[in-house]
Amino acid sequence: MSLDQTKDNDSTEKKEMTFFDHIDELRGHLFRSVVAILIAGVTAFLNKHILFDIIIFGPMRIDFLSYRVLCKLSYWAKGTDEFCMKSINFELKNIDMTGQFTQHLWIAFIAGIIIAFPYILWQLWSFIKPALSKKEISYARGLVFFSSMLFFAGIGFGYFFLSPVSITFMGSYQVSELVNNEINLESYISFISTITMACGLMFEMPILVYFLVKIGILSAKIMSKYRKHALVIILIVAGILTPSPDMASQILMAIPLYALFESSIFVARRVEKNKSKSKI
Image (cartoon, rainbow, N blue to C red; front, side, top):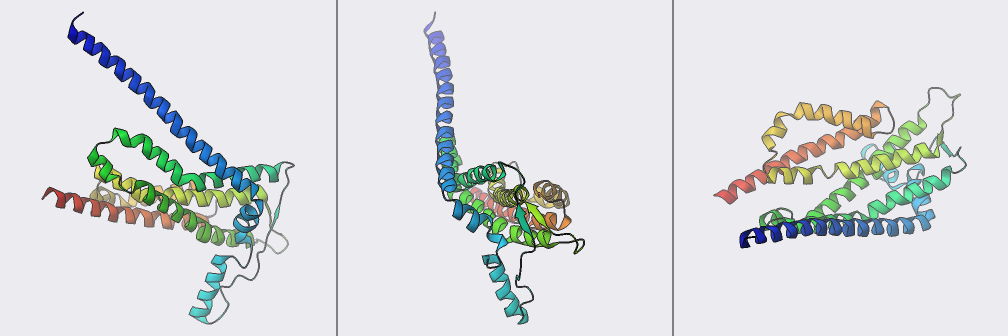
């Protein structure tokens, strides 16, 4: 066997070992991410009062932050309490033997993901970073910070704006005074968690667009050209993500998604402008 063949064999073995090393490394990052979610989830589970009475059931109280802000705006704009929340016209009920415990576990898990999200992103970045060039790493500077901020902004928007607006509308809506609204606990929690998490994830759109434009797959011109198509897709996505089939909730979900799309076009233009300057 020649020396060149021996080197080729050694190189092949090295590549195979490197591949499995990457698999082991990925397993380590995933394991640490899962541990972080479990620790945050268990912490949330043990703080049941904060998790449910303050956070999950917050929009059911008339002193909720969003309602107080709306009431102050009502006095400022009209000098009356027209938009002040005076009552919540529905009650929660549980009809399953294990319903409350199951929902406790589920919400604790969701809370674990939200709390550990920056750490999960950091683990993902730590795994990807060694495979990137210096130029690509420079593109991703601040990735974990800005992605986390956008995610929490989306969570806040879904929780403090979309959730209370949807809850008060759907919870108080009546086809007749003869019918009282008694909402199932699972339905209420599914509504809150789906809207909140969906907003958190959808707020990551500008980050995704940033990288696609950086590597040349997407451009502001293409996004502007297909605005109408994007609007149709956004309405479909809003219909899928909204737990309730009513049009009002879907529109409330679609509006911020379209605003994110427009902001993503702005981001794309800024990136293209900076790329043009760097070539000069």
